[in-house]
Length: 487
Ligand code: PNW
Image 1 (tube, rainbow, N blue to C red):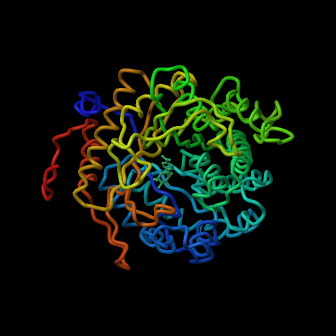
Image 2 (image 1 turned 90 degrees about the vertical axis):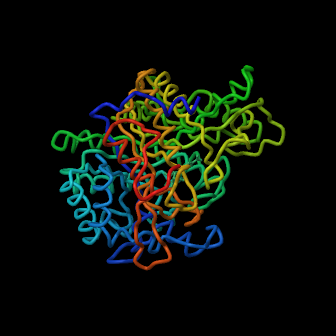
């Protein structure tokens, strides 16, 4: 059970890498400074303000664009080995295309990378964390297959500019969220609602863009730069409500059609989308009167081209869900939800964070890690995000408990189950713009005062707890910090 997990005497291996993660749009601000182009989050927050719960935007956010030295100092104070951040595509290539590179974007990321290296912190770059250049949206965004090669051009420029110093690359952050939320449910930019159609077209382009980028790196950069390229996939665990075959199938299908949508083509022996996903969408599409399946199909060459294109798999994990029920074709409108089997939800009694979807279930972390190990022959995994939201208290005891419990579950997965996890990034370095939830949900180890134009950062209690874990490689549930009370 979860309390046992945090009493763990296991330690993190000495070469295990700890870090924190952020994303450009959520922290940088400076949205139109020094030649930066407009992206889909600038556009959405400025033009569809009603979609953001507090009507806010990332125009200034944490103002990290102007605080390179200060933020690198925070990272140094935390004793992290790695800092995972994303590049703003529009800051580097204002129009999205490779024909014009913005010198100020190059300067800004060079200064950040150099400052990190000076402090002994390894930069890990996410090429795409949701902020597509608006001009590329205007030609259709990710459902347009031509965007794949435009992305590869952008990646090429980034490898070329920064790859001498950056050895850890992530192509995409959470393709499921980019596609299903951006083009199907409409909960993320560009907030399109082509349910059951747009998301699959988007996913198809992303997989091709990812694989082509991987091969570009192998061919042109790996021989001289010798880094690694991976992809970050969001993976919630789905637990069957009961032991019935029906509930187990419902939960299994959830994991395969969510995490597996992007993991299977890249990590499995056979490649391509998961069989159950192809079957479900083909059958439902036929019933719904479509002439062919709504899930695009890869050619055999494409299947081979995508297979094996990850030196590591990044896992973003926060929570779990419970699934039950059988396939129900009655009133099945096209949607990703209806393409799965049964329904999934989180029991109301589960303790939760400020984000409605974030319920605390550390045992699910261990289970998804074991599922990945068993399904894909124990690939190298880096936890690229894990964290807890509240409303911003400095004495953030619930966050501390969350980290202790989830890291305890991770220790068990490493030591008892042999899961090949080599690194862990906490989300997030500091409170930031939490997408459609604006500044109402806070994930930071550092507090940011968004009412102060200077955006001062203040260490929360959890930052000291996390530093102690990094220093000692152990979880100490009784760890306390001088100025704070006890949890
Ligand atoms: C991640 N879920 O998204 C993103 O990568 C971050 O940018 C974001 O700030 C962070 O989590 C916190 O929300 C998620 O459905 C998307 O469980 C979906 C889920 C969780 C996180």
